[in-house]
Length: 269
Image 1: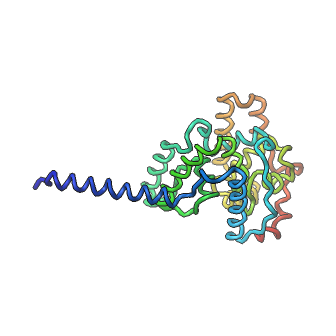
Image 2 (image 1 turned 120 degrees about the vertical axis):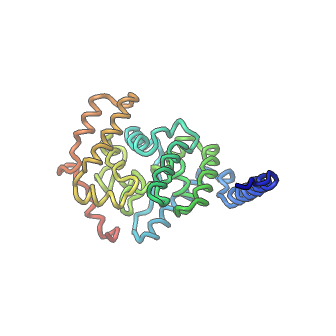
Image 3 (image 1 turned 180 degrees about the vertical axis):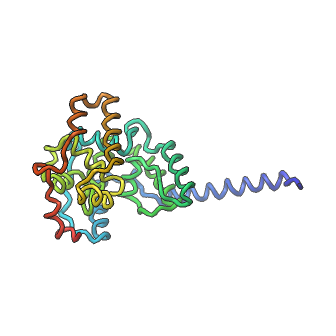
């Protein structure tokens, strides 16, 4: 077998290095410039994207009302964080372990189905970028996430997420979800309600039908609830009593019955 000349190998590496540099410059230049935005501007951008997403999906939604993190019960925050991104307060916006696991799943499926996104990355995707599953968009997402982590505090990032996350068909943010599923104000929510919102993620419209419309929590979903509660208990974020109450909560009792049916005409379901 003929050996490849060293000069050709060196030239190949130089070309790849040059192309990589050009691609990096292109990604940086075409990514959102978060450093130039204030937090109120980012909030307005987030609300604008919620409206655009609803319009694209042909949902008629009420005017989004922003809620601060201080208005959202800590139990709700923890339920969703431990569901979606347990290391949220400890990483720098990206979990390379999660990306590696997603890459292995994509390889097995022979398609790009999983992204391994953190809450920070989901905020970037939902507020600043398109939701197309492409390598270029993913690279822009990584760069913009690092920018956002330098620009905003973790609490600000979580606040944005809890205001824009789709938690049902045309249901954006925990405030609207509280009304939609439980006819409650955000301040009235308990840990069990946060777990219910977690069940709607990451495929809210699909999970809305399988869980809420059918009024049934599958064994797989029950394992998810138990896993979140186990993590919360292990981290001493809840007591054993709170654990038991949330685990045995009856979501489909008359008292907890939602008013989602009243929204069907509004949402064109």
